[in-house]
Image 1 (spheres, rainbow, N blue to C red):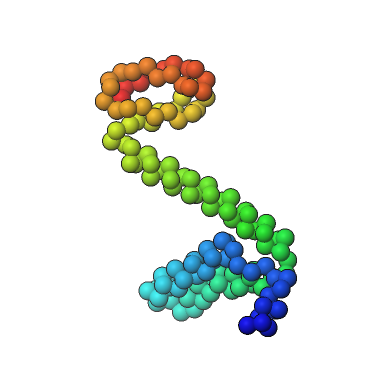
Image 2 (tube, one colour):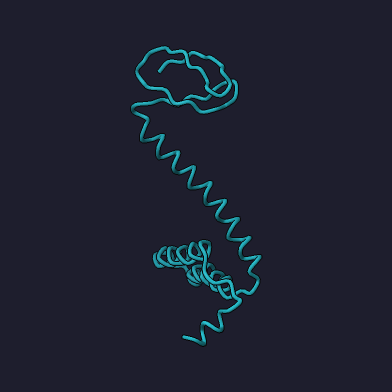
Length: 130
């Protein structure tokens, strides 16, 4: 164990992007089990090999930049999914409108008939049916 610890000194190691690549490799491997095309299962090894390369890399700065870029993209996807899930959950009780002045999304209760909506950001008033 001490030899491996010595070998890993100065190397990047694992991170969130590497974990994503390993999970992607496993998912692709399972998918390609059901596709009877020769040599296509080798595609499932590409993310795994890249994850191992990143783990043993000595270029720590570049690997950190890759991880940071992936975390930014993944954060945007997570936020989009979270908003979609919340909008679907609230769709029975609330309605979402966009302010025509500034474009801010406003959430108003359903079943109130025609109401006047005031945007808290720009103060624009508009009438919508809920």
